[in-house]
Length: 171
Image 1 (cartoon, rainbow, N blue to C red):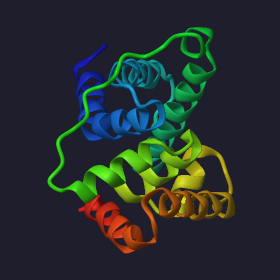
Image 2: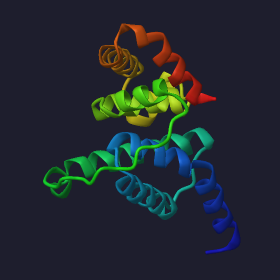
Image 3: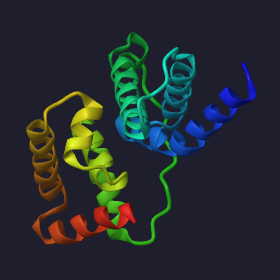
Image 4: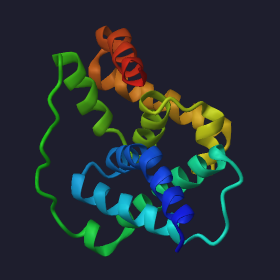
């Protein structure tokens, strides 16, 4: 491998490793699994024979492979028949942030991933659709249903605060 290939690998990793990890964590809710999935995604990326068409294609490919790796893990025998250890919970600036985070983590995986990609990573519904292989309508429906579940979990009084807290994660 020449230096240009190594530099390109470093660029791709530096630019995307945090997003890949956060999406994997949002999907699996487990730090160790998220780290394993992140490693697998970049191994697959670096083993690719063909270059990406552009940055959008690169990002979409990485997010799609991350989602697929997460789904594979969740379907695996090991995952279905083991009891995970409790994970360390991140520190929050306010109780509202903590409540919103716990509510998001309790959503079904398909809703956690679209909430994460939309609010935490800042992707549009059309970009998310390309990443997860669904239509824009399906993504908007999943976002709507996820918000509805969050409202139920947090109570109506938290509706605006939850949206505001999620939107703050973008910045």
